[in-house]
Image 1 (spheres, rainbow, N blue to C red):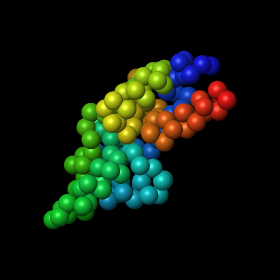
Image 2: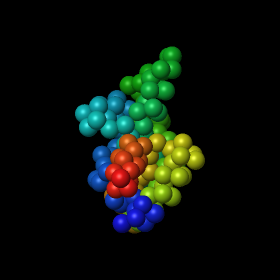
Image 3: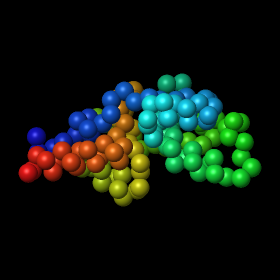
Length: 134
């Protein structure tokens, strides 16, 4: 398959760990460490409502006077996540992520979260493309 016809499905991380918006931020931090991930899709009643990144967490934790234990994921998440269909062209997703400085794209089909595509996944896809062209 040529690079211009690759879809996001071929390079996403399938079945990503998710977290409910009402969960404690401390639980999200624990999950991110335990699973070695930097992004968690955030759901409410099974529906995608945001994303939480390690950068979102670090910004809040660094603020003076913030009681982290009292915060929920919903308090800190980035609402309106960048979500794409699994057949979206890889080049389109990478272009949008670069243009808007998104750290991830959540892959959704019919409201169901199928995967996540992060900057690390983009670098792996780029390396694969370079190897295929060599």
